[in-house]
Amino acid sequence: MSLEQEATVIQLTDHCKGHGDKDEHDHSFFKCANRPITLRFEDVVYKIRARKHAGSIFFLEKNSRAEEIPILRGITGIVRPGEMLGILGPSGSGKTTLLTALGSRLGGGRLEGTVTYNGKPYLKGLKRATGFVTQDDAMYPHLTVAETLIYTALVRLPNTFTASEKVKHAEAVITQLGLTKCVGPEDEHGDGDTMKHKFISAYKDCLEPKLKDDLHRIENVFIDEEQQYMEFGAWPTTWWQQFVFLLQRGIKERKHNLFDSMKIAQVLFIGLLCGLLWSRSSIHNLQDKVGLLFYHSSFWGYSPILSAISTFPIERKMLEKERSSGMYRLSSYFMARIVGDLPLELFLPTVYLIITYWMSGMNPDPKSVFLTLLVLLYSVLASHGVGLAIGALMMDMHKAITLGITVMMTFLLAEGYYVQRVPSFIGWMRYLSISYYTYKLFLGSQFDEHSTYPCGDGGTCLVREDPAVREVGLGGQAVAIVALGIMIVGYRVVAYIALMRVGVTKTRGTW
Image (tube, rainbow, N blue to C red; front, side):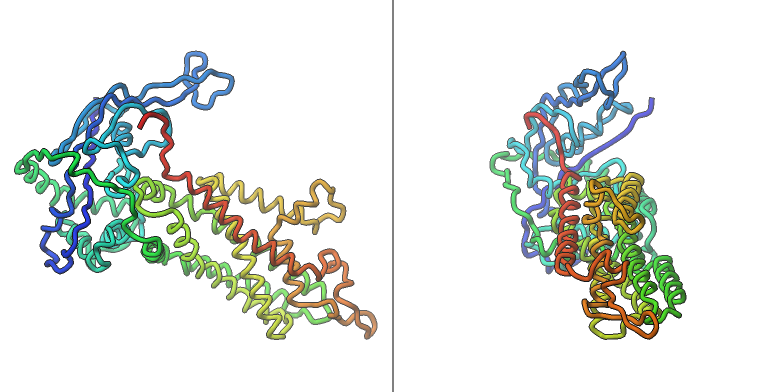
């Protein structure tokens, strides 16, 4: 029977001042940062709801009665300052569940019993001061070891430390834990497994012997629990600081994606292909111009959706880990993620339009050029928001892509451009489509109510009378602008609300 070993170390950071001028190799401030705490847990019981049917347990079986299955039964224990508690047991015995419960990170079920920290009940602010290492830790694959620790220090350490002091603190941790060989010129970017192997190797070579020596020397420390209890309610860093640090970290992590060669090649190829296809189109070919504008609205109305769908699902583990520890506000993370994606969101569509606009002979008037670019970027922001919302709602790549394609095809078919007589009970769906409003704005950027084009034998015709244009109309520009604006904000609000459930405990009970 195989045994698994797990351990959790609780360390509470005190608001120490005046340590920034210490030598970077002086680790005495670690003693100042430790806050003695006694963890007690009594009669801990944890149950989950399951449905029993025909002698088997089905968590989602219909037409079956629900029962509560006990996972933990009356667990009692105590961990005093200076002690390390090891929990041993066979697979499935509840070791991980117990530690997760003590760290207040369970995702559901009923939790009963009593857990106190220095004789007081659990406070939400304790998460920010408590270290919790999961069995399968999540890390950003494109951040170095040093960057991982430094950005954690910048976000989590209190404002009693300056930014430079926080960096020195992280560097001191690297030295203290014997991770110096993991940083430097050889600290290259890799995947998440490479990062973990570096930490594990450093632990085996350097940290393990130090921990053994410390445990032999350490003495039990009994303290006045009431005197040592602290209130952990305030955030140690401001919203703006969290936003800046998370934005910097996100740019470093995703800079290899900002100017991905495949994405650039895709946009350049499609832009050049469109330019070549429409290069011989003259002012007499109104249908060609309108057709190109429709293609612009369709391509950039739906392509960003697929690009944005993966934004949150690929960061799900990191978000769950960091939110469960109270590392930062969700709003600071969300805004940092949105702002960090803007360069790629807006750069590639701009390059695409520069290529196709001049090769296809569109209206050379500077006002028309500017308005067309503005409409394109406006549309991209809206469609990107759809992708963010779908990804945040599903938090699963395969499900999100399936839903995204379904949404795109539904809007595309319901817009009414492929069938003239759309049933009234479906026709209203066109007003939820991004490309519908984008197409209308594109037409308004190129033509007005009095625009004409050569037709017949030397005559002229009004653009608004063309069947393809009349179907959409040149009016209602303000309505289209407002509609897209609502979508830009609305879909991001949906994404934010959907993310609020990630990393949040949902246990029911007496704690």
